[in-house]
Every structure is written in C-alpha cells, then in structure tokens.
Amino acid sequence: MARLRPNILWYCTDQQRWDTINALGQPNIATPTIDSLCANGVAFRRAYTQSPICTPARASFLTGRYPATHHVYRNGNAWFPTQETLVTKIFANAGYDCGLVGKLHLTAAKYYEKRPDDGYRSFLWSHHPHPDFSRGHDYENWLRFEKKVDPVALYAPHNAFCAPGVPAEFHQTTWVSEMAIRFITEQRDGPWMLSLNPFDPHAPFDAPPEYLSRIDVESLPMPLFRESDIQRQHAFAAIDQQTKVAIDPRLRHKVQAVIETEHDLVASAPPLSYDALEVKANYYAMIMLVDDQLKRIIDVLRDTGQLENTVIVFMSDHGELLGDHGLILKGCRFFDGLVRVPLIFSWPGELREGLVSDALVESVDVAPTLLEVAGLSVPNQMQGRSLFSLMRGEVDPHHHKLNVISEFKDSIGGPQHADHSHGSMVFDGRYKSVVYHGHNVGELYDMESDPGEFNNLWDDPGSRDLKLERLKSHLDAMMATVSAGPERAVAY
Picture 1 (cartoon, rainbow, N blue to C red):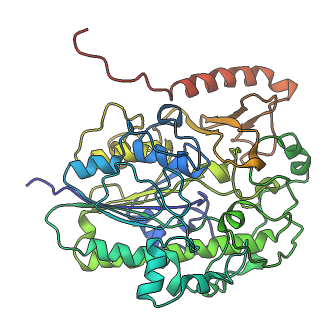
Picture 2: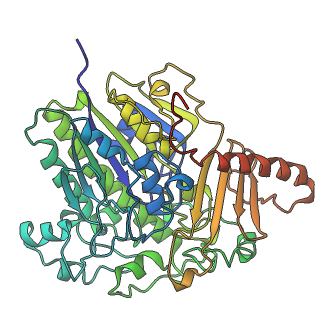
Picture 3: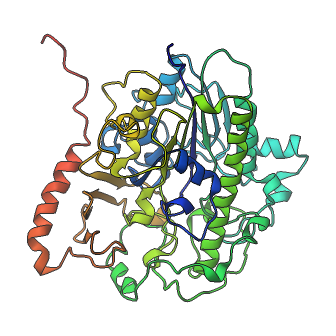
C-alpha cells in the first residue's frame, strides 16, 4: 500500500540560538516539547544559517538557494525576485494546501509586506507583535476583535528593550498556535503544509511575566566573554553591527524601562548598557513560551489522528549574540551564537529516533529535504542537499557536507550602518574563516581547541600558512554558492 503524502508542520522561530534546547545540553531552560521532537526524530547539532540577518536567511531556506544566487541580501528590500521559486509554491502546485501564520519577511515588512507568488492559500500575517498604527495585521485584529482587547493600549506599557511583556494569553506566540490549530483541523481531502513563524525570541526581550517568573536569573551563566574582547572588537568598529560598542556583560547595569513608540528602534538598537543575565532570562522565557505553545499544536495533531503522518520541522532563521564577546543582537558577525541554529525533524516511524547528528548542514538543505520527504522532485535550481537519506539511516549520520557558509552583504540599512558591509564565513568542521571584504581585518578560529572563538589566528605569524590554506578553501566554498544558471540542454 502506497504511503500517503505527509502533512508538514514547519515551525521557524526568529533569532533563536542553537544552544537553547534542554535535550541538546542547555540545563538552564525547560523545553520538554522540543526535547520530545529530538527523542522522536533527528536533531542536527551543527546546522548553520546562510545569513545572520532575517530576510536573506529566510530567502535561502525558502528557495533552497544561497544568497549569492538568489541575490536577496537586504532586510527592507523593495521586492522579491520574480524568477525565484519558493518551496511552498512547489508544494501548492503539487496539491498541498499551504498556510502561513506570522512572519514571511521576504520584502520590506513595515505595516505590510508585498507577497511574492508564495503558494499560501491561507495567509495570516504578523511581522512583529507591536501594533502598527496605520493598519492592522492579523494578530492585531485577533486581539481587537476576538480577545476584545485594544492592541495599542495593551502594548503601550510594553515596548522596552528588556522588561516583562504582555500576558501569555494575549501573546503573539499564543496567537500563532491558535491559528495553527484552526488550520490543521479544517476539513480537506489532501495533505497540508503549514509555515509557523512567530516573532519570538527576537528582541525586544519581553516574555510574559508568568514565564519570566520561572527563570532563576542568578543561576544563569554569563555570556562568553574575556576582557580582551573589548579591545578586540575595536578593530571591527567600522563594520555594520547593531551593537556599536562592545561592553563587559559582567557589569550588570539595570536598564530603565523607557517606553519607545517606534518598535523598530527597540528591536534593533540596544542600549549602551544592560543586565546580560536579565536579557538571557527573558530570552529563555520567550523560548519556553514557544515550547508550551508548540505542545498545544502537537496535542491537536495527536488527538485528530494526524501526528503519525505529519513531518514536524523545528528551526530558526538565525541566532542571537546575547552578550557573547560583549555584543548583543546581530549584524555582520559570524560567531556561533549568531549563525548556528536549531534544526530538528520528527516523523514517527519514518525517521531514525533519538539521533543527534554532528554532520555539517545548512538552512538551504531544508527545502530539498521536505520535497524528498513528500516524494516530490527537487528542482535543478535548488542548491541545498536533502537530508532524508541521512535521517533514515541509509548513509553516515554524521557526514553531510565538507563545509558550511554564511554571508552578509548590506543586510541592515539606515544611516547608522553606512559601511554597507560585506562579510562571509566558511566553516569546515574545525576551522572557521571570516572575511570582511574591503577591510583588512578578518577572523580565523580553530573551533576544536577554541570553541568559544576567543583566539583569532588571522594576524598570528605562526598561523600564516594555515591562513593561506583556509583562504583558498574559503574562496572555493564561496564560489561554489554561485549558480551556473539554467541546466544545459541535452543537445546543443
């Protein structure tokens, strides 16, 4: 008997680091739902995003193509290239009922977003939770018309960099789950694909107060930091980054909960000082809310008899510096906290259970994997490589690629980011090279002996030969991300 095409639940958080899952080694956060996905499926411990910024990262995993090929590098771009095909459109063309809840962020997303030909039949859009005063988004409308809450009044006291946010009942992550449950319980004849994209745990750090109370702030470890980081970051001052000046996260300055009216300022411009542990506690609390809300969806899948035939993907678009090396938020940097992301697949009875893979994988690998899982052909233009055989135990579970790449090119705009920086990273499983194109500074780390990325070998005289070798490998890897264009005709 032929297997039914599976449903696909694709849950992508925003700005979640790789090291935020209890089952994968983070004891300071409770994530029982995500832990269960790890136990019932495959977790990738070394998954890397194609960009440390939202739009190019999302363009990459939705097309299965690298930034150098799809050319969507900027947050705030005016349009999405019409020649690019989203994997969701391929699923829609194949008979899947496709829906989206939350972010899309393939073009400029202030107040509204121009949709490409995305394939979504149901499109419930909310880029960020804070009300956009000129027009309502779907989360805002849910608050106003279903919860009978004025969203402007609800959020008026909750737009600070780090402070308690709105109660869980009214949170955008809760709205995502409620809309997801409505979608997956609709009557339909064929399979469905649902993209869930909450804003959390993206800054500002504003977890519901009832979740913040579950975190013991004083038990949390400090960010990765040495005193040398302050001086070291001076060399990178001209390169675009939301943190302009590195600070010592051990100096725990309380931040006054100054309420800004402009959400974008709060979400992307950190204060000059803050309490790193308060920020981390808030960040962890947001992830715990995500975990609880994901459980609601999975429970409904189980109760409606759909769980056994649903592939669940849990991932994030990119990470968060979270005080590491005196930096916070994101930008043209490539520390693991920013470019290494969670990636977990679960499909009962079809994938290996409890496998934690150390293979090097990338976000571009998600789209071809989902296509192969559904028995659909992977288009020639996709550059990612399917993980399906690995997850079924048919090949070495700890080897997939020789290296992974990440790239930033004028990815955050505005007058405060005038350098229009272009940086690229290549990691081969041991050595990480980072080139800031047009600048004399660079980075080279031996991640085997220096996993915290403290000892930059770039200017070390004793590492000159290693640097030359890695630069050649770096160039080869980056050039390999450029598509050769249309496939060759059979007869020419």
